[in-house]
Length: 193
Image (cartoon, rainbow, N blue to C red; front, side, top):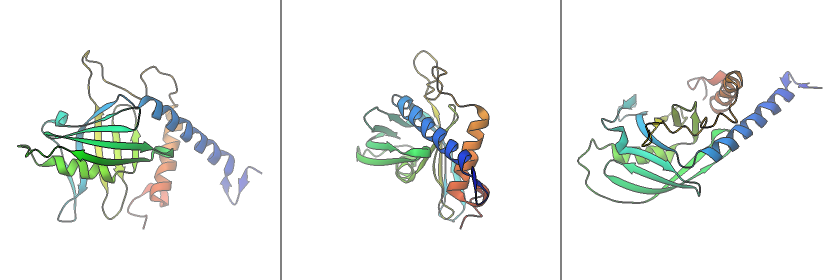
């Protein structure tokens, strides 16, 4: 009875339930977290995947608040935004009002905000956060890390007290399942079309 048409529906239900519980725990711990940009990957003007690493990651940060507010530091500009979390790592970021200073930076500010507006998934292992828009035509990935607080302790929204951590094998199963849901055909973005 647990298998239908070659599928293990009990396992699938358990994975969904674990994913929902992980999302709930994540949503509880995310507020107060500030992340800094380490790498922005997107499709360049030449159609090839391009990677940008900011010279000053602290100039490109996002800070989550409990009420769905997201504060964005984009170079020398501040952007007010909102965010909402869904199940299975889904996230929506909506930028709003922004300062419009002419920044003497690397011009990454506008690209950073535009990329944040596109992301649809948020995944983390507690040390690296990946905000992604998984698309074969125009994928976007922002790799971010927690900003260290004043005491030198890194903020870690997923494992700050050790409660609610999922075992590594469950995390691996969830990642594989999510990849299959997002990309199809075994998690290979090139095969999903």
